[in-house]
Image: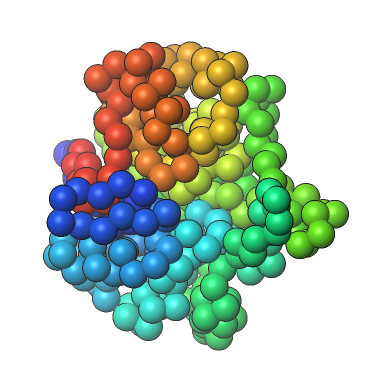
Length: 276
């Protein structure tokens, strides 16, 4: 018997009419009686959208963080208060200070209240993820993803210090997958490790190459034409029937993927519900 999976996007750069958009990402996942919040958005848009969509964050049994940037951890402290029974899964590096540097340095780490909330959690509620980890029945986090492809530039203007002396490789970048009888549903936060690296890692760990759905941020906003071409070619090999680019994928990259992969690609937005 196939296990039903429902993925509702609560926070994204785009939103359905009547909902709020923001530079952030969060997804509410329901499967096999489990309720999982994957990332917590940026500002109050996620909270407002959850209420408008009838999602009770207090019912979350699991909260999982894709990485420690502010646009994925903005509401973490509030959600931990609302769902006192929820277990939190995260990589230890989420707590580090971090910066992006363009003309000047910008702090992009977790909000201070989120760092305080994580540090104050009882050990039984806080699970450090440093390897592939099952977080619920048939639901897994990747752990750190090997950077194996030659064309996925997983760098960027990311540093551990405001002076730009120490690059931040974002080792805490994690993605999530859900096992179903017809293949895997894969959720990405920002996918700083590269979407193909991530899919290849999941296939190696799970032993399953069939992917039913791929949804989330793919960090292709500033990708070169060469990278976009090789990424779309690799996605064609995976033959995924539903691809939902969100957040940091970038609108131009999303259009390119739709041009190359056709009707399997549907732009994500806050309020979208993917049911499998």
